[in-house]
Image (cartoon, rainbow, N blue to C red; front, side, top):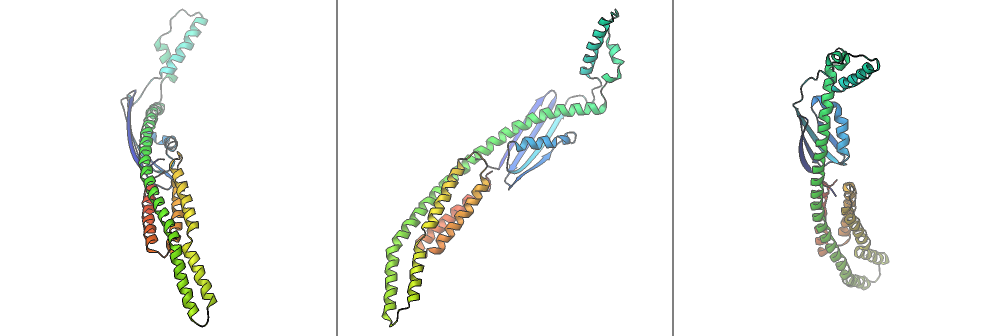
Length: 291
């Protein structure tokens, strides 16, 4: 399980190029990536987003890239082209049995060996991007480690709260069972009052029985709540993003707890219900940071 909140930076220097990358990750419902790239690397934003989305699947991510270079602003000659022409012309000289040796001046008369300003800029940008991409991967590795470590702390806190909720749920179940004989005596007293009159209100008697049965029977809600707690605990062990699943389970748990509170007109059960609601709210706050 990973947290959506983290910060990482990475710097790398290669071939006279220095790249610095900072990645900030905050909680969010969806994956939103904001990129700040040097102007000459703006065409690489799509590739940068793909790198980020390969590691981060949910949250608001801000990426800032800065570069410095000691590479000359303009490279007049293409070493690759010169070598290619030299090899080809040298083979041709030997084939034609030309005794005069080949010189660099002969190659420089070929206009194609010179690099245009646009080509030079594109080549420098590609060199810079290779260093930037490597630096981004290093920053992402650090970010992912931080998100995992924070996720472990969140999971530890949530597990403790789930255990406390289960303990309170056990108390609610025990209290509900203890109320059965008490409510039975109360019902008997009410029935006795009804028999004191000349006529028995059958509808009133049936209503009292139905109300009693409804108030005492919280078993369905308790079973469903325990089921949700079980699934929630299993989600904590998952390596996949589970934030949305946890949010849904919390909504269902709130619904069951509210039903128990509404059914049980008992002070002790009400106290347990309030405690569970408070713990669920604290868990909800933690889940907002889970991917």
